[in-house]
Image 1 (cartoon, rainbow, N blue to C red):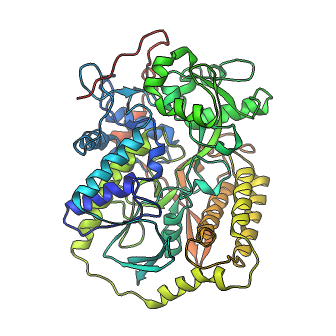
Image 2: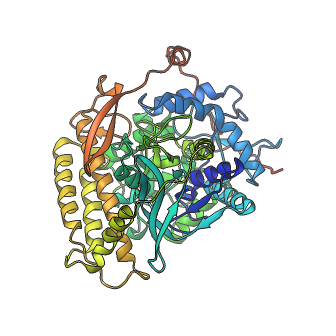
Image 3: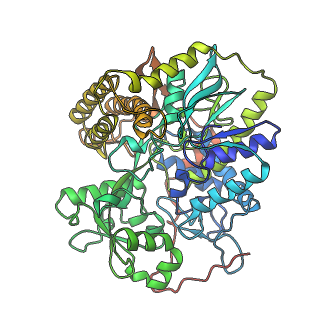
Length: 579
């Protein structure tokens, strides 16, 4: 198991329950995963506040949010199974906010028809990680922390393990296994402004790509509408969608609530791609805030409700920006938050295109299509983490350990050691910064042919220069050495993103082309896939698989149900209870 976020831990729990011997390897520490940044809630159609909610409506919302290029089967399984995964999480010790009669409380979120997000204030991801971690410890699952894996090992076409090193002393480590699950999250650090922490460099997807696995929808990168803007040191840190779910308003520098114009029906609870573009347009029109964003205002909710339902946001702005959000608005702007693209997997099993290799969570693609709905990430982790763990455990029962090819190990060792012994003069930190700037400017929220092609040229140049990186010192406690290998993965993923973004000459979901503002019906019927051709990034397309008639008919009725409701600001919030 590579990765110890929500998907990795849930997969490990399921594989262990099926009788497999499991080892979890994580780049950082157990419990420190990007899952904790999913603060607003877990999307699941429990129907506790809106009885009309059901899996069919959740399925429709997910498909429409993804602009219909999603893997319909993944969206169906996700919508059907999310409620059970939420209740199961309670058996691990998770404690959700409650309605007065003791049911799991649910809140409204962008582009969800009903109030659907099960939450723990604005710390839901943290509660998920805590509960899963407790279960991992209880089961006695083997965990290797602060280990970076850099290469998948193969016996023929089959994946039989992984190679990497201990981040503390640089000691090389080889893991041999019957199956490998990649759950390493996304690649937000490829961009300059991101909510992702330092681990999000696309290692797992990069390893899969280098080993021969296919990468689906790489061009689809989500810009969360609301990241912190000021001061510069905190730029990009997430401001959870729960702020808008609880009733926050977005206003421009003129005090105008602009989402009433961009989406009069859903307003601030429109889909993330729509809200992010709306903020961008306001800034471009000269109506942005002092630091190039918009205002997010919750003062009308009252200090008591703010501190009760949004405690993390209250503390975050008070400590990092010296802003009391009960007295002053927040300043926010879009930030890179999530990768809809990732390794191509089978819906039922999480199996990639390589035998013995599975993927789940943000490292796997298909569920979210062109845009992820808020809250779907956490239920994604639970649903497909469980399925990948179950499938990998079943696969290994009838499979023997493969034979490790020492040439593969030696090749990776030489690649890792090159920055320490080579005569190059390139600095990995500076190259990383140049890559982040190029991607932010050329393949960011608003894209066009000229900027994308210039960005691709820059990425290819940086890739050539990365072969001449030099890092002083030894392998011990050497962050520059770590960055050198991370950068190779980042450059590969960046090239895949830009090449696919150039070829998708339309605007769809998170992919916004200023030179092709409308959807292209032909491109709406295909997904782009990046694959390795002797180490070079190549693209191909595959048709979006049509859903069966019984599901297709759900979209035949154009009449949409009423949007998720939320109490007016003057209504005192009900006291949630816990059982």
